[in-house]
Image (cartoon, rainbow, N blue to C red):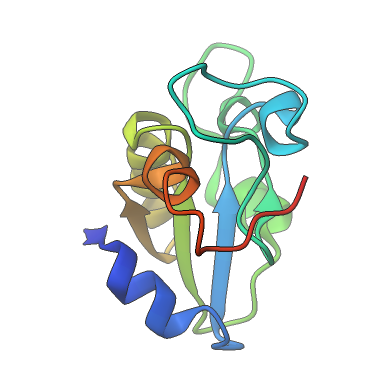
Length: 123
């Protein structure tokens, strides 16, 4: 399942939306990133949860119980994942669906968001 920029903008103030930035911590904090991005940081209101944290030691997804403890989203919440360009977030959304979450991938991700100077960003 995919979410467009317009769909995300329509739901940013929705209390039932959990926005997860699944990039590395340095990317989330705006300390590191890709030079093709207009700016660094993260979408306001996004929580950080690195894709690697969703995986166990052998690289397989963690159990549904472990995933639910990590995400800690309220029952019935919609989870939207994003990364730099939609690859890591696509994987994260798929993993979170195995734990029973209504999870989607914001395909445009940070690359699309950062290119829009009219959209807010947090370091």
